[in-house]
Length: 146
Image 1: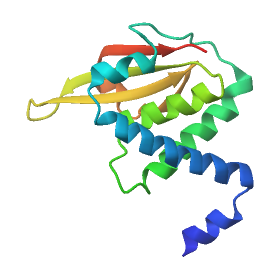
Image 2: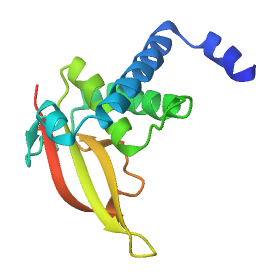
Image 3: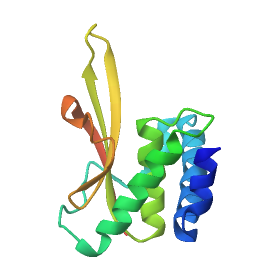
């Protein structure tokens, strides 16, 4: 009940951003069930990156999108882990004409099993997945230029 009251007290822009992130998380989860070869062209130009320039004008937007994705991913009734979050955030930034790069990486866990991770960067700001990205070797990347 407390969280619902907090939601009601949020400003209208933040509420809309949260609803949008919930929608894109669902959309990205559906895409995760589609063969990756069909999804990959919509993610951008493979094996290229966008610039790492700091665009101070977008810093607040990038922070808001990151916060909305992380917040809403906890409330989805479907799995909303790294790839789902990265694709959802990429689509939210694309809608706002902000370029981004989605990274896919692999590593081995403690038992030697292959694990994968995805993260998203725009400029020098990491939107999703930066918590553990150093542990992974980049195997693919997709630049979404606008």
